[in-house]
Amino acid sequence: MNKKKKIRLLIEETKHPRKKPPFRIRFRNFLLFVLIFCFLSGGIALLLHFVGMPVFTRQGEERILLDVQGLSWEEARYLLLLENFTPMRGKSIPREDMEPFRVISQMPRPGSRVKMGRRVYLDISIPLENVVFPDLKGKTLRTAQILMEEKNLNIDSVSYGFSELPREVIFWQSIPAGESVRPGTHVHIKISLGLSSWTVPNITNMSLQEAHKLINDAGLRIGTVTYRDRNDLLPNTVIYQSMPGATVLSVPQPIDLVVSRYNENAAGPQ
Image 1 (cartoon, rainbow, N blue to C red):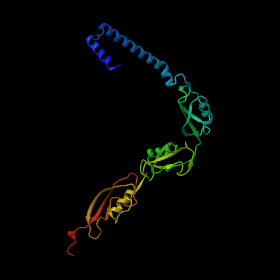
Image 2: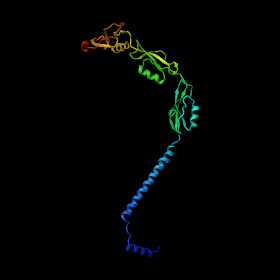
Image 3: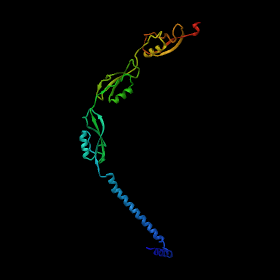
Image 4: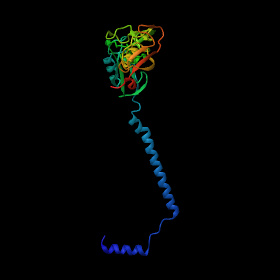
């Protein structure tokens, strides 16, 4: 179209402008557009629900998971692959009541409906190996229980008795420490009630520090400490103890001490 024709058409449109369609026609066209849009949207939604989603979720490709417990790993793996599942090794659990490398349990559980290609985890039995029995002496019952659980061992029974070890610690075990035993072995232990009798040490003429150690080692304790001026002895030397050395006590009692100290006033001029 040349320039003259374009000018002529522009003049004609100016003289005779196009009229807008009536409101009724425009409203009808709008409703028609809305209906067509809703129809197309509903059709697409139905298509996705009944066609797209089943394809995406692989609906119709589920199977009942077979039970492979008790089979060997190779047998279970072969059967699961035939059923289009993916066998995976789970935990290795020491078992004495089963042959090695047998399936103990599986996840998901047998009989559940599972999608094809799903991973199936199999816990496998392994042979038991001997463990070194721990030394429980001097340990509390709670500490001993933790040590035993770590080695798959068990405390069978507990009794109490007097010993030289402090109260509430183990002083005897039925299986010696360091012995090689099977997992699951049971042991009997004895827990200390402390000493059945206490022998008072002879601490006269010792330093207060040495006396304190000997009394503690004997399972006793120091009672009242009084001081007396004695310039002929080193300071803090035990002069007197309330119970003579070698005294055997059926019930522990505190030992009172008299200790020397240096008196500058009584020393006199140098």
